[in-house]
Length: 100
Image (cartoon, rainbow, N blue to C red; front, side, top):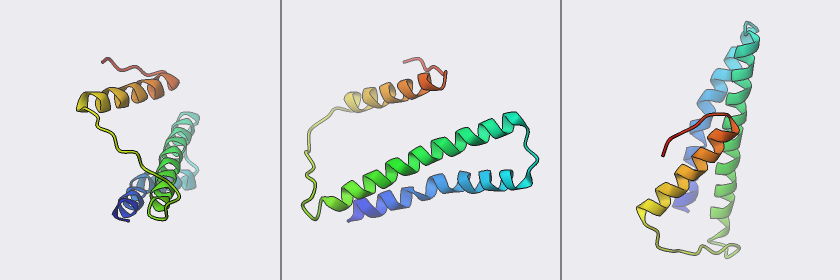
């Protein structure tokens, strides 16, 4: 269950920006550009928290035999290449680019 605690601890990361966004919104002094950026932050943090909660749920199912983990070897190159591809895909969705 250590994996579950690690995942749960990771939920704290997205909470700080959410608190900051709430404070900004409560002032009522944001222009349209600020509101757009604030909405983008909320969307990103929500996606991160959803992923972490999903991971936590999967991890909680393993000890109860409701899910099976398949362990496979992977090189650092495979892992990094896969992550770079994911980030590149996400960045294209928000009109950014990265060079690999």
